[in-house]
Figure (spheres, rainbow, N blue to C red):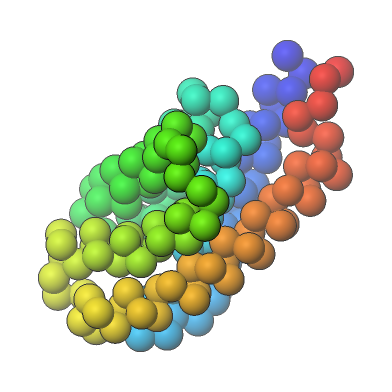
Length: 152
């Protein structure tokens, strides 16, 4: 029970710092670094289903508000990604494709986005890969260092 407040603080800090990082990092061809999407994937792999769902909804809502997207555009995708990461038998390497697929998802709903879909997908693959490794390493280090999942 002592872990619940720690997990809540960890989730809130992840949302705030992830949103700040997404705003501050460059956006080549209009494609930013998917810090919040990578955090959702990390949370889905090591969190409980309820906390994973709430975190995915919150991260999607933050992403929608940061990018001025219609309501639930990112949140619905983030929920789907969290469910696939959590309950599918896909290897971890397939998780890298979630950001290029997100660009396709956005283009389906908002075809007037900067740049065409093909260029956005090509740029999204290396950017998503880099963001995933950095975000996962940082979150894992904080989780271990803060003893967030330790039994008290």
